[in-house]
Amino acid sequence: MTDGPNTPQSARDQANTTERAVWEQLDRVQDPEIMRPITELGMVQGVSVDEAGHAEVSILLTIAGCPAARRIEADTQAAAAAATGVTQASVEVGVMTPSERKAFIERVRGDRGSRPVQFGPDSLTRVIAVTSGKGGVGKSSLTAGLATALAAQGLTVGLIDADVFGFSIPSIMGLSRDGQTVQPTQVGDMILPPVAHGVKVISIGMFLGDEDPRTTAVSWRGPMLHRTIEQFLRDVWFGDLDVLLLDLPPGTGDVAISVGQLLPQAEVLVVTTPQEAAADVAVRSALVARQTGQKVLGVVENMSGFVQPDGTVLDLFGAGGGKLVAERLSDEEHGVVPLLGSVPLSPGFRIAGDSGDPAVLTEPNDPAAAEVLRIAHELSRHGRGLAGRPLTVTPR
Ligand SMILES: Nc1ncnc2c1ncn2[C@@H]1O[C@H](COP(=O)(O)OP(=O)(O)OP(=O)(O)O)[C@@H](O)[C@H]1O
Image (tube, rainbow, N blue to C red):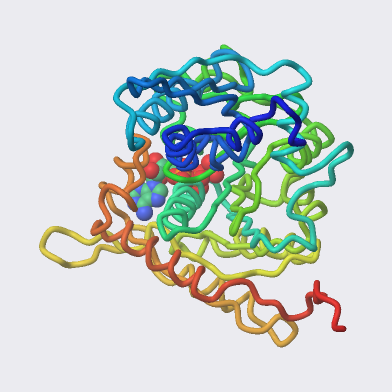
């Protein structure tokens, strides 16, 4: 926004000492969807404090009744009330005009016009696509657990539920309860992903309108699926992310190929169970990713032995599947594909996932949650391999 006579910046410049103290407090109020201060986003229109210390703050929201409205209003009120010299604070809430909204979108996105797909080859965001051969191996639970664990480490994390037919991320992340799914805020053509447990999340399950996601099927063919993934990467505003995780549908279908085309620099994490029979199909899903130029980051075995109350381990689904997949994917051309971890079967992990409160936060000592936390730590410790990537700085 330019600093004209009636802009927030000029209002701030003309503020007296107490009003300046209020502005400084407001610098700490974040828009919960954009995760940037409301002052920086131009959402604070004015601050006035009278002689009795009564502060009045006027803020502008993008659209009336946006999901974040109450929280922004409450946080603004609390911040203003905490400023030195303020005895009482009230907030006046308005809604942006179309031109203010347009300026807001430009400010947030930093663009004017056509937008490329985010997280393309030049992006510094690490993109990890989680795939599996078979369904039901716990791919979505692990993806959600890893995303939450990485966010808890302080990274900025996005999560795309690309499992269009079997979307389950909204409920695992607590964004869908009793058939009601949180819907993203839409500002112009910019879609703001809801934030859950510190992770920006988007899923087809958020675009079903009033339909109950528990009883609604999405039956699309390839081109429609491709457009959806493309739209998620173009119109959903994630901002700068350290890591973007994608929960792919099981198998080797259209979505995996689209992700490979749109995000060729993505690394692929393969989830499998300990059953040897699951290994072949898990290997195939990784080979499809390789065909589109993606690198296989590693393998995670899920539903490994069940730790019984007496401490003995019961291998319900057999043993060795993860190791087998990792070995089959390792060769001279691609190097060693590591087995990054083995996540045991754990009732607590399942119960937490069903309730929308990931076990990595609520039950960090649960054996499955602890292993997911360890894998997340390993992932962030090693970072993305830069070998073969063009340098983005030009030597002088
Ligand atoms: N380590 C584990 N211990 C116990 N239960 C688990 C574990 N991992 C996943 N589950 C449970 O298994 C079920 C299937 O998991 P999930 O939905 O994550 O699988 P998926 O591979 O994503 O399936 P699909 O691809 O078919 O959507 C869920 O009920 C989940 O809570």
